[in-house]
Amino acid sequence: MLIDTHAHLDMEQFATDLPEVLERANAAGVGRIITIGTDAASSRRAAGLADACGPVYFAAGIHPHEVKDIKEGDYDRLRELLNNPKAVAVGETGLDYHYDLSPRDVQREHFVLQLRLASELRKPVIVHSREANEETMDILAAEDAGDAGGTLHCFSGDYEMARRALDLGFYISVGGTLTFKKSDALRDIIKKVPIERTILETDCPYLAPQPMRGKRNEPSFIGHAALVLAEVKGLSIGDVKRITTLNAATLFGVGEAAGEGAIAYPIRDSLYLNITNRCTNDCTFCVRNTTAFVKGHNLRLRHEPDAGEVIAAMGEFERYKEVVFCGYGEPFIRLDVIKEVARAVKAKGIRVRVNTNGHALLIHGRDILPELAGLVDALSVSLNFPTAGEYTLVCRPRRGEEAYESMKEFVSGAKKYVPDVTVTVLNMPGVDVEACRKVAEDELGVKLRVREYNEVG
Image (cartoon, rainbow, N blue to C red):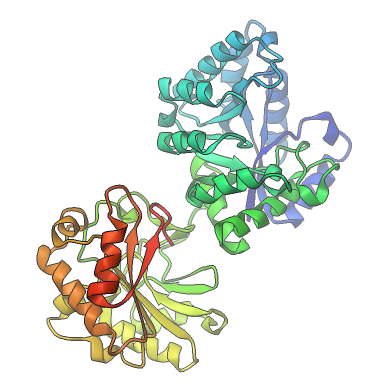
């Protein structure tokens, strides 16, 4: 399913064929649409559409172009509309210094008032910002807008703006502009934005995607932006649909409830296996501390599956490039499950990889590496730091500095039994990547892969 988080279905461009527009959206897999108000009257129409159409929700607000015409009582009308159960956000509001259709001081005044309304009602805010990057972000920060959350709609700013928005807890919304031939700068920015904080929109009837340029935009066209986002992020279209739908549901409270903790979950052309949530590290940066989700999959297990359950959950795993033991814990805690499942995978000729913290020798109190021969094709081991002291401080292993030295022993020994051994490091602040490279290549004799910080999966 896809969610169009920003449409203007109340506009006259849809006056004659809205039922057909909604039918096409449904056929294209668009399960939810949020239609956006631009003034009090438009917000009232948006609310009416949402009440009449099951998959449609709405936001109520006053666009910066329209704030010059605000009438007495308009905020009371907005507040009343926003008490509707299908009202999911305040907006769109913000600043537009490109057209300046309203005086800038009036824009700023009503941007603040709508942010305060969102804070009062505990609803996220949909922000329009054009050629007003710094002032938009200064106002959002001053008003603590991150408390209620929100999104920068139809993002057109620079990376600094995106970074500040992410730091506030905001989402970045993209649509047709992402597909335009001359949008390389935007695509470069979105490549750096975690997809876990990215949502999709059309802004219809405006900004039709590249294949539809010149036509009226509509929700069914959102798949074009999804395809380009998949290309930019190096993901499958299925990944993008799953992740952005979860993001929209998280921000706006629309969409289907997430399922139970996944045992087998696809990302790109690999199938990942989540066999335990236990770990011998308690890393300060671990995503488990902040969310149950990785690339749109819920990984909080209700119980640890046995090998039979894992194999059943894998389904037709032959269609994947590789099967990866990863999940929300340290896979080697369950060595017997790894070996039994790996046998089944190797019997079909599929590559097996294990992502590990490298503590297996300590976990089992013996050298388990010979048991991996012929079963595991690749190991990806989290090195993370060039010294035991740094590793212990941030990764917080149960066995202290002993864990770091045991991890290096594991890596050195693995080369005899596993064809492809790599150590990884996160490029987060404070990590000396080049020092880690020397440990990997000169001391351990293996490859180093640098992983993006906050880009899990």
